[in-house]
Length: 486
Ligand code: PFF
Image 1 (tube, protein in one colour):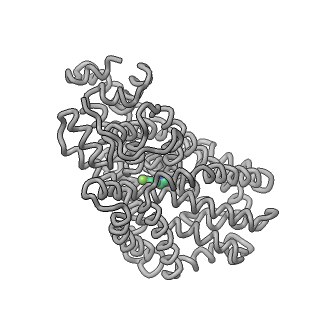
Image 2 (cartoon, rainbow, N blue to C red):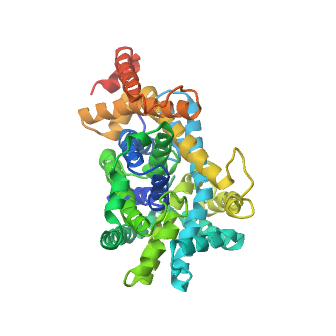
Image 3 (cartoon, rainbow, N blue to C red):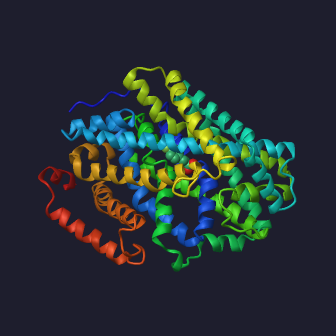
């Protein structure tokens, strides 16, 4: 069996871990997690999110990394090679194509949010956030969004920085940036949690995040939690697969995945613990929506000693975290254009960047002149988020799980994953039965084709997984026997 030779590799053993954590930790953790947790009512949502990370996110992430390293290339090429090695259907390459498209479309709205973080670093400095109340800060946020010039200018700045770095090649730059950025962000968040502990309504914040109200366990919230699990771990969007293709042979994929997933989850929970106590202490509504952190945190910065310095550093860290995620979203496209058509990285970044600028500037208009341009009741900004998180990423995840669980010869991924027999059996069970059934149920519910809420009848779903697992093991095609013999 011939294996594809790697063209690019991470500089050190920590290279992938740093870069993948950099991709995973971003606005999803600090901006999106708190605001959707607020919208879906707290503890029940957090529980579903954690369950999705464990049952679906981690197995799918391992699969993606294994596919990337085995195929050594951008998503389309890597999946194509792995499938070819198995004599499988080349149509699977479409899954790689969809992942790349998802990453690119996410970037189109992500640069707008990252632009908020950049702008707020500046606003902390120039004093425009010295507003006395949540309402006043809300007005600052609205005024910022109402100006296409401001909002567009910051979005363009983020897009250009991203393209510049990706054009140069991610390995050296990203690895180096990460060595100081991740610890810095962790220290900032811990200090903010410390502040919330002593000055905010910490008890209420904790209760909101972790107390569990069964009536909030709904299929709709589960779909949001599932989509967010994919979003926050950068799954099925090309990033992890492409970064995985730069991992040297012999590095443990499982250990790496766990480190990334745990770091990502800790940052999200810390962000929640830092933000909700401040929100409750200031009588703010936790379901305030996308502006949540931009309206609440500046208030905390005003009240704490050295608050301005702290606030500047905090928003600067968030901006860097956003940038490292943004870079990973377009890396797959640039790697693909470079490998497939021999286009140099800077040119590929420039080409993809032109399309990016057009779409992201249109998405930016959703906050001002285009607020009423709606399709299916959504602005372009909301639509891009909805399409990618709720549909494209979970669909990509289900397809990768099915590819790995049913369609590839067992020994290939066993070799790549290098798990213990029990670990491999567990991974296989997850990608064969648990992930596809759960994702499918959630899809059917979202489409209105499931007459009941899947979470209200969770025992049906557990039963379906059990029956499928037994039937699958009894009637497994011959080629797959080898994979189960662990
Ligand atoms: N994981 C990133 C975050 O939580 O901010 C978002 C993301 C990065 C999504 C890269 C998709 C991707 F390919």
